[in-house]
Amino acid sequence: DLFKVYTVARGNYNVERQTIVSNSFTIPTQKKLIKIYTEIDLFIAGKIDWVEVISRVTKSFGAYVGELIYNTMYNSYSAIGTPYKHTGAFSADTMLELISQVQAATGTSKVQIFGTQIALANIADGAGYSDAEKRRFNEFGFYDMFRGNSMFMFPQAYKVGTTTKAVNDSFALILPDNGEKIVKIMLEGEPEVRDNDGSARNDGQPEFLFGRMIGAAALTVEEGMYGMYKFV
Image (cartoon, rainbow, N blue to C red; front, side):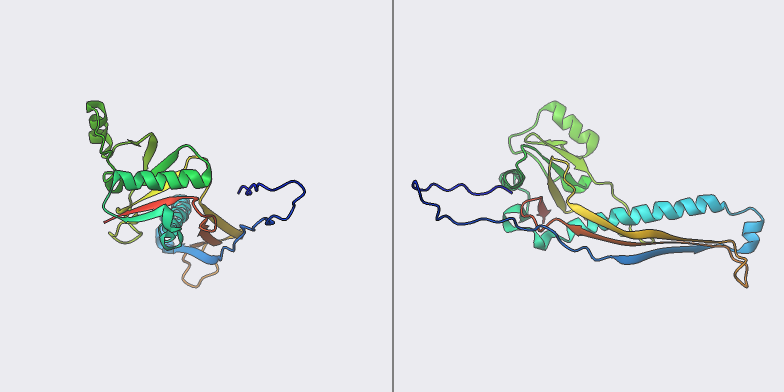
């Protein structure tokens, strides 16, 4: 974000001009819907807690947004500049180099490292650990610090309706510790909500629909905003 400073002779203003580069980008959005129903007999008999069911719709959409953010980060690997990513077995020196590159690009002195418990367990300091640090490893399943930089665990979950893990266990994300959000979420317009008590249907089934125009994009337009280490 800074401009170059040139050394010139007195009276010489013939230097390369610099301009402001736009970092704007477009986030495409799509309509995402959840639609639920129940049988009218169950509803009338009080066997369905409709309020709780609608609450699950809200939670389900929130879980989808979380998965969208994660997938956007993970799928941005190919767009990250070469100095900020690496694929291979873990090496403390390689991790330090990635951290250094992100620090230099963002002007931060610290980074935060994110991954699943399995991913973070790959990260170990070749300098060794004290007994207290080893006890923390047994407590958390990973060392919570790497060369002064904190590590945080992504919670693991299944993709809805499957036994497939939602979060990849073979990568770690390196973020500057400056509060910058590397994934931008676009919510277009207002949410669409339709709560039908069944009176508009021939079968009398109560329905509920929730929809929203949503999109996400990672800040790969700005080099070095974050780094990624894929373990093999």
